[in-house]
Image (tube, rainbow, N blue to C red; front, side):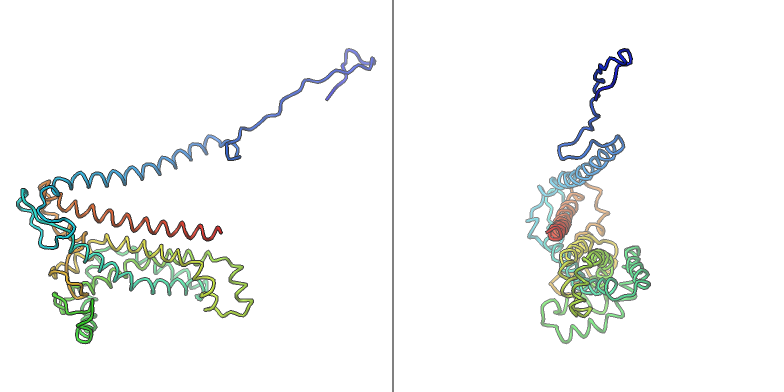
Length: 344
């Protein structure tokens, strides 16, 4: 752009005005503008928090391994296949293994999961598809409140309130399904109520809000245009659920179940109260007793006065840590798979 020179007015001579370079905002490699100072700080804090979590989890695993190695070196049995009584008094020749602990833990957790999954699915479908909006909020809140009840309350309730009510059911199952797998007459007394059967029902109530909450949130995200299209084609409400909601939320439902399973594997106080009176050897019956990983560690905390005795139980805790980590990783993988399917 040119402007007339005031000193040469009337001569018709014009000179060029100085050219100013436009202000260019630096861009990042992916095409966005450089963030402000606050945004840079936020990103660094977020990244640091993520790294801190990874470091803490790794440190916990390394600590458990470090404390377990001395005890494992003195173990005269196969740690993974030995299922007898733990003998840790003689620290130079110890006898312990996790075979029974794995069986009881898996049996209780899977039994609870089998009970909780269909109930959680039904609650989630009702709250998102059938319940009036005015009623859905309070009902969802009541289900979520189950997660706020302390574990010790669940344990006392299960042993002294629920177990006597379940005694006729347990007796009937023993009489009519006594020879069937998981329903064979157990080594523990059915009359006592402190069995895997009672513990699994209590644990199912404890993990129900986790599975329900995750499933409900996934079902809510079902694309509304798909629901309206199915209704426009004359589908009933159940057909809409079957053809749109369930296929969309299946992966999220399974992920919620895996999160509930991870919660069930590590439950301690409630199961310790229920199973403490029936610590007979587990024989793959719902009416047996036994120790889970968590209850075994909690029940023998008085033996932690020696690094080798404590190391034996820390070794069991390490296996539980890895098992829970794998279950949660599978849940996370399922969530990523659902997100990828939605993107496609």
